[in-house]
Image (cartoon, rainbow, N blue to C red; front, side, top):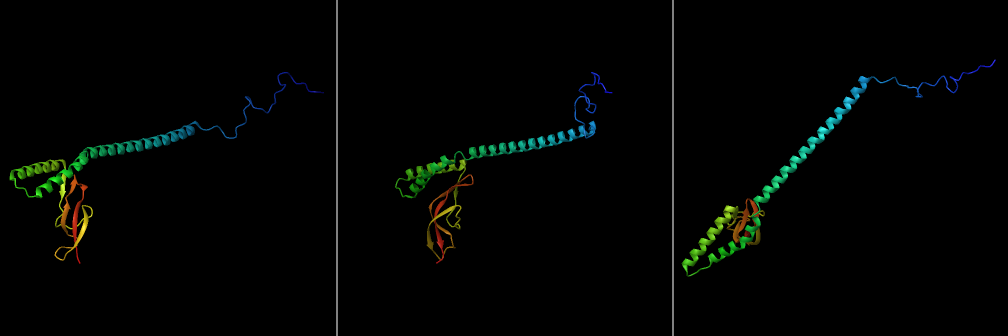
Length: 183
């Protein structure tokens, strides 16, 4: 005798699970384990974001400090070029005062003008470099000639051709000098 299948069982295999899903090889994960893993991932992500934020804040703070320092230096040394342009006039006054003149009132007037100009430049930050009698320093002096001498120290400055200046402790113009050397 032949077995007859009912309409209810036609086309349905007995071994297939309901819903058509493949059989799971792992048991279902514990919800507490899943939450702990998610928490750990979020904590790591939060730590990474906090680290990036701190780095960006430090970079911005460094940028702000650098910009402020550059602005301060720009304001501090803004008049440096103007003072540098006036130095030839100061040199001319000093050379003119070395020349003998019969009119003492004229000489007195020139001395007063040179003195007021020098004082005004000093208030702005201009300082002359002392050279005569000092030991030659290549950071402050420019040696244009040498002179053999036994009565002076080695590399002592014996003559100053042009006065050197510093502006707010920065070299504006080196002094042009003659330096003694031992024979």
